[in-house]
Length: 247
Image 1 (cartoon, rainbow, N blue to C red):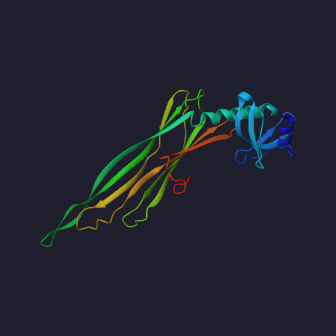
Image 2 (cartoon, rainbow, N blue to C red; image 1 turned 90 degrees about the vertical axis):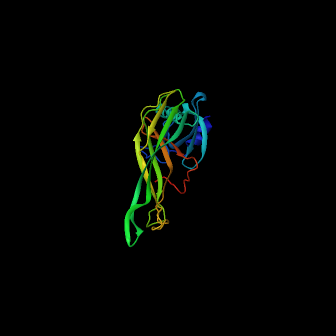
């Protein structure tokens, strides 16, 4: 194991301070040598951690080869990643939908050179939010978590048939997710309009159409040293990342 550690720290030098970069942080071994590494995989039970250097090389070494603060970080990294893993944290969605309808009235020809006000179509509004349920099946509570979400919709108008995308963006702190319990959160809502003209005096093609496409989320758990573990998910699962990117 000593030879592997030597390779790991080959060319390393001491840092007074260094910025976090894509999950990399400064690690110190028991001999006081420093290097920028990223934890990739961890098995505390067998005192094993796989790390990646900035040059992309990965090596598996003993956790005990690092200083105490780094050992604590590695174990917390393992715990945080285990907590939000799919097998330990189940996430489900329910659509919360409310609808309302309004008549469109206008002047219509009734004969004899006369006209009157009548119903010529309808406006249908659909308001959508999402109830997200987290089920913590691990043996630890999930704390210091926040949810970032983006709800995507498209809306065309009578004058502009090309749908315009709208994104509702929110960041919220979550309550503690206790072990063996479920915790639900309901997002803000977004509303779309479907408008249709039905009277023969009006062009039935002159309509507006709207649709709520789905939601994309990031669950972020903050660790004790302010580093963050992130899990991404979306609903429906087929939501195109290319068409509906994170913004």
